[in-house]
Each structure stands twice: as structure tokens, then as C-alpha cells.
Amino acid sequence: MTMLEKLAYSDGETALTGLLARPAGRPRAAIVVYPTIMNSTRAVEDKAEALAAAGYLALIADFYGKTPSSFDESRVFASEIRGDVQDYRRRLRAAIRAAVSLEDARDLPLAAIGFCMGGGAVLELAREGAPLAAVVSFHGLLGTELPAEAGAIKARILVCHGDADPMVPRSQVMQFWEEMDAAGGKWHFHSYAGVKHGFSNPYPVQGNPAVAYDESADRQSWAAMHSLFDEVFGDLRQQA
Image 1 (cartoon, rainbow, N blue to C red):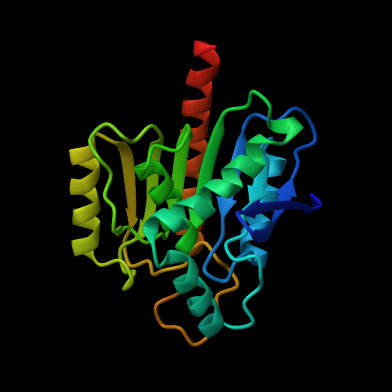
Image 2: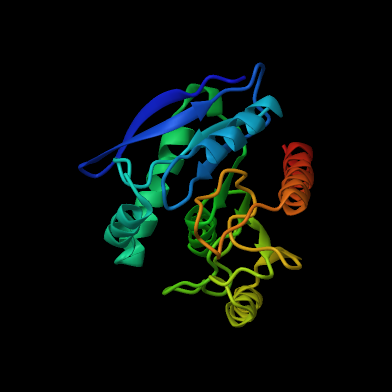
């Protein structure tokens, strides 16, 4: 198993600590991994290690600079950083800067993936035109206070969504599609029938009826991510 290394970085005066998973050889690309509202968890760390095993340099971002002790506390922490969308995006960009500052990431293509809150985070980055080749959202929130402007999106976008996710109703899905079309984004949207929020986490918090692990959706969405990465990074290599 890959050992995760701590990586200190900051957003202004807020000290943050990322977790870095390195591949055995030269990385194919650098991937910033945005975690859930609970910040880094066992499930997210497993995904980062799986990326490293597949040849990617993976950095788990730190949302808060502190660890929530409960879901209720995580909601308080999240509200503190998401109160202003521009401030929130600045916090998200701090992890990108940390990733590209690494010697191992020099000249590598860059992408981002995220889970739950992190899934929404990578879409916020795509909306503002962050220098990412691709972003992948797993059961992420789709709404925003600052929709993408026409021509702003640079990244290829893959959204993997549980159709039975009560946190992201179909009305929000349709709004997202319309936003992406108006902005001219290049997007794929995979929706899994009967699947709830948090479908990629085999260790869900008990007692939350909105959340449930789904082995098939987890496997299929992860394979879709790899397929997109193979296509995007392959095209970038051919252009180099």
C-alpha cells in the first residue's frame, strides 16, 4: 500500500495539510483530490492510493486546516469557507498551487477529482477556468452561486451522479446541463439508477438515509474516470 505523506501549504494565513500519494515511477499526471465535507477520510485516502497505484501523483486537498469531530461540526466548518464563492474558490486553488509546486509534478498535466463536497469543488474550479485538463465529480453537488461564463471552462468534465441522490434532485441536474451548454463546456454526465449520495464510500456514516454505498456505481464511475484520463492525457501527449 502507498504511504501518504503530509504536505504543508496555505491559503493566506490559514495553514493547511495535504496528503500526498506517490506512484512507483514517473507519474502520468498530477491529480488533486478534493475530499468530502468531513475532509480526508479512509475512503478518500483509499482512492488517492488507488490513483498512485495506477501511476498518478495524487494530492488530497485540505478544506479546513482542522479535522471535524462530527458531521455537525463539519457542516459548521464548511459554512465558514463557502460563505463567499470567490473566497471558497481561492481555498480550492491553494491545493492546485501546492500540487504544481512539487518537483515530481513539473511539466505534468493536471486534473482534479472530488467526492460529495469535493465533487462540487472541482466543478467550481472548472467554472472559473482553472488550469486543469479534466475534472471528475463523484456524487457532487451541482449548484453554484456563480455559473460559468461562456468560453470560461477549459477542463473536460465528467460527473458521476446517483439518480436517487436526495441532495441533488433532477431539477438541479437539468440546471447544471443548461449551465454547461450555455458556457460551452465539454461534459459527460453518468447517472446511476436507484443510487444514493456517497455511493463511492464503502464506510458510510450510519443513520443517514440519503447516503448509501453502491458497489456497481463505485466500480463503473471509477472506470469512467480512468477512461477519460486515458483519452485526455493521451491527447495531451500527442500534442506535446
